[in-house]
Image (cartoon, rainbow over all chains, first blue to last red; front, side, top):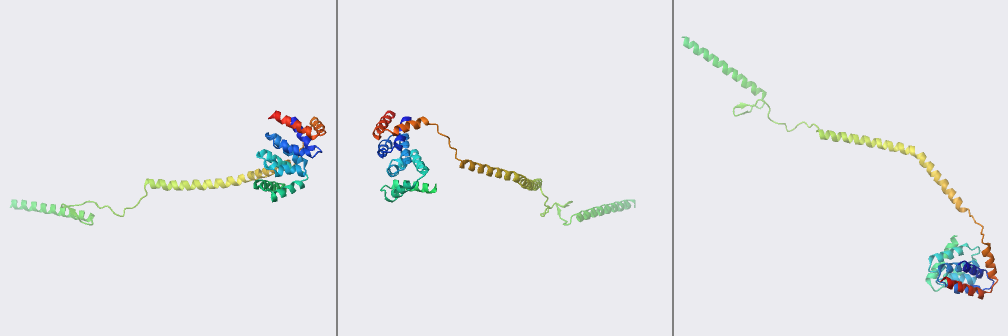
Amino acid sequence: MAKVEHIIEALCRHKDDSAVEVLSRIGTNCPIDDIREQTAKALVRRNTHDSLSVVIINKGKGINDLNPKVAMSVINEIISLKDKSEAMKILEDTINMHSDENVRETARSVKALIELS
Amino acid sequence: MSKISEISSSLSIFKRATAVKNENSASSFASNPFGISFKGKALSMDAFVSSTKEQTPSFKENIQQKGKLFASAVVTNMTNFKNSFTEKLQPVINFGKKAKENISNLWNKMNSYEIKMPSFNFGSEGKINELTKLPVSELEEQLSSHIAALS
């Protein structure tokens, strides 16, 4: 497990932007909750438009994960970010434009939490 | 002549006897204001029971009244005791409230301090730095193989 964490963290810090696609495809679709959680948190820490979009917009991933523990961990990681401007922008776009009502509602809640914190 | 004197003397005795009897009957009537006689005999005492009998409290009522008085006295004493007890207890309650406020303030202050433990995972950092130098494709392969091994 330690080795997996190291690889996820290495992909998080990797200069190549294709690392985001790897994390999204393998990590966030993993059936193991801990790996999904580690991957989503790594994507949040990367704090780019693409990485944040994966955990905010996609249904069943990141803040929309079916496991509440995973979702709450990701929300906590977003709130812990020093620069939340990109996250707020994606959240607003999601609230205004996403087709799924549940995803819009989750984004609205997370945005309210960030504003309160 | 002697016979006549005997008869007259006996007559006088009879008259005296009847006179005594009349006086007795008159006196008995005097004690009975109604003067009612039954079967020819006067009642020697008042046989009528007064309808307005003097109402004297019974033993049970006495006990009840005394019980009420005792209960009121107990209630009064209890109220006085409660008031005095509350007055004496008030400083203790104030002290407890003050202590609670101080503890909650201390707790809030302690919560505001953030204690950060230094991380000693220099080995992990070194491994991660080495992994970041690898191409993404290789990391993808390693990640897939490790996840497959875990699941």
